[in-house]
Picture 1: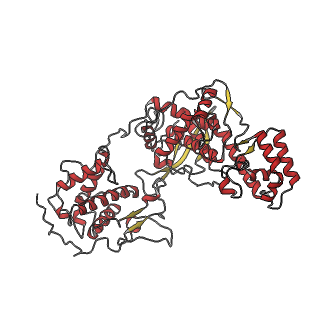
Picture 2 (picture 1 turned 135 degrees about the horizontal axis):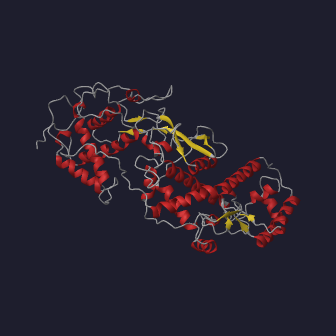
Picture 3 (picture 1 turned 120 degrees about the vertical axis):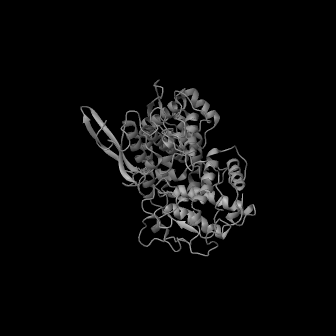
Length: 550
């Protein structure tokens, strides 16, 4: 195959780019607030962080498109023209191209393709290629093979067909838009990966296999137990914590009444009530050494009981002997979830405390686990796509509708993003009570400062969150495993909890079943949701979700 450079079209900047000086957001039809900084074609970084209506699921790192990493300056212009053409398929220079895309690409898709494009062009530079006209089929296949078996940092990995396919589409894309480029392009005879389609029809099947019942059932069982049984007492504990923090902020910072402080210490002994543990002793009080018997006592909490904001070193010295004796008598314990109320076991065999004492760190960890559980329930039982889930806001629960004697219809409001203009279109999903309840719990966990319109699910259900959720459940069986601080629990503590509580879940699921998180995020929910992301009894998308249908 010939590798001579092109001469059929003006290159090397002989003619200006068709997008020269263009406002990128205006080119793509994006709307920005008045006064917002606007990127133009010549900028090396195109910023879309302030675009109105950009989907919530688009990660912040994907909102700027950065071309500065391309080493060859002429290829930097090629990359800009290629991305701009996909953002503006109706541009007069693009619509005449026979193989160009006819629909606007979304920003996160272009971000992923730009990453591969930068790697491809810089790999060519490393191979000594200085003009795209020198690229051959051998270069294309070699890079596709390299990317399929190597991570971006150069470490070797197993063969990844999906990465290979993404690289092939990027390389083919430069050939399809070659007539548009003003500085360089492939040789006109180069047809990368001949015989391969530029896209593969998906049919009506999911790419990710449905979650198998042995994984799905305990997953959903654990999530429902957390949402329905542990969430109510957790919300009460979080409310009590907020009230305590607000109360402490109102306390005076004057000298403490030693008589009142002594009375507080004596009450702890009389009631056999442990003192609060202070895990941040080094950060909070540098004047107490780690070896001090009182180093683990939360003196701020003790001062608050006495009606003051803090205890000064001189004041502590006057009650040290009394306090040390009291600590030796009643001990130190985590401050939250003491005297936990009883809840029904997950297996229905009796009742147990919903939690044991938790530190502030443990309470935050448990709150995160319950948030993930609510997310799992909504994903599994609503059939909503990830893009639709991320568009749910505080206030998304539509008031229930009486659909018959003793019957209610529950709906969740969001926006359909896929295949719709930027910003999507409002829509409603008919769901069962459990999904509606999970949305209510997710809203309450945001706290009283959450306002109507704030995002309901503040982060995606990724593998990290799913793994933490699975590990927490497997270690504590969703019960007073909360009784050992997730940041402090030991194997012995877990073993004791298991012996005391017994099995709380129908079964455990193994760490190797990573496909569950991927399937749930993508909306592939096994027997509950079909290929279109709806349950067997739900109406089709775009059908009667707003009013008719059960």
